[in-house]
Length: 421
Ligand code: AMP
Ligand code: GLY
Image (cartoon, rainbow, N blue to C red; front, side, top):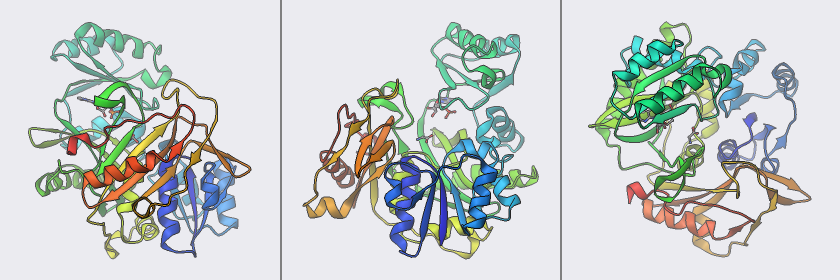
């Protein structure tokens, strides 16, 4: 099959890697891809979605998979569909579940899906008044997309008021902050769950745990994610069932009623409080680095899952997962997440160790290529993935692989999956 993948990260690389390994008959294209995806297919440089759809049409692309949220919120799916193309991802309207926190919170409230108590407002007085009814810490969120930075956990009421004022005045996040959510702080443990949806049906993938902070022991600033593992033992059958019944099913039914059936990845940010799943947020795409550890756990065809989800036929297939565990350790560049770093040559030692060869691999993200040499030139450069019969084995293998990758300034956390061990 000819498949186009939108995006440039480790997430998109891992999807491509999984698809490439199922059949040599697949031909892959990336827009824009990265310095390593061009070894799996052809990188394109067509930024305009209409032009890209025309390219897909002429080149008989049979399936397009969208990795990141920005093109979804911009409506790339609607454009491709208007040209009769098959594309995996939610419509512009359904992408509001991630694109607007106000839309998401109001949707959750309307369909009785448990979420933190909140107010949605653009009035500073109302926001302050509601904050006064909450105990600290207090959570303040900007409405729009802020590159993962739009959530402030204020430690006291004064801090919350500063955050509210700065958002509503447009000072901290521009237009994205002109409406805010003020909500109660939920104290529990956080999970990422992913449901691949076709509008009616869905496949729930094994639950994962991400590590958002830069440094060991969950210290330092927030990042896009420094490592992840799956499945997590923190979720038992009962909790999966609660998530299915209380979150995913009502969401799919609700979106259909709203006239925006949800097709694509529904990424559930869940806080488990006293055994109950409370929805913190939705994203409308795979998590990164969660995708990098979920793709290698799939034993049935990845391309077929995306194709069937895009054509509303998920009920026709059985998606299967390995009984193994996967751990992914992100290797970031020196100045991440504060700024960019000078591109540094990446040296990967020759693997002549059977265990490493068989049970580990690298998903490349922020890399460029010149004359066959890879350079680290993004924040999160790559993810070393280890697979094992248990989390400990998978993690040891991932770290063995990390020891074989070198570039100036490389930075990793050394405690990925600690919650499970
Ligand atoms: P979001 O972008 O909504 O996922 O928020 C980013 C992070 O802030 C989440 O992953 C949580 O760790 C934290 N967070 C968001 N909302 C809450 C809440 N109501 N209570 C506690 N933590 C929260
Ligand atoms: N790893 C979290 C995210 O992709 O949002």
